[in-house]
Image 1 (cartoon, rainbow, N blue to C red):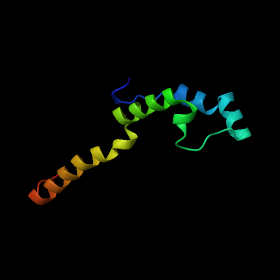
Image 2 (cartoon, rainbow, N blue to C red):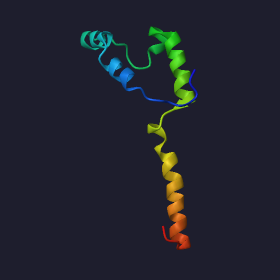
Image 3 (cartoon, one colour):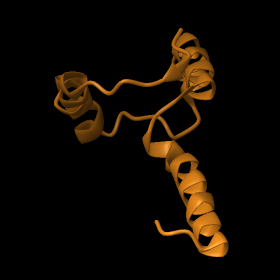
Image 4 (cartoon, rainbow, N blue to C red):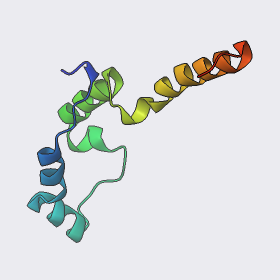
Amino acid sequence: MKFGLRVPSLTKRIAARTSPARWVRNSLGLKAPRGWGWLTNPRKAAYNRVYNRTSFGLKGCGWLLFIPASLVAWWAIHVHLPI
């Protein structure tokens, strides 16, 4: 199980978008509605639930970089220091 920062993989991303199984599922309309993962594949759904709650990517935590930068800018403006 992965804990912490996710490392993106370009090859896995392309393979997932161009797989024959995905094409068949989407073209024939064999997809289950969102949230039905527990019925179609309970083991995978449980794994994904834990993974999504214990790991994070850089895309979702941009606000973590914004808050310290804005505090430094606010401090520099109010203390009248050159940036």
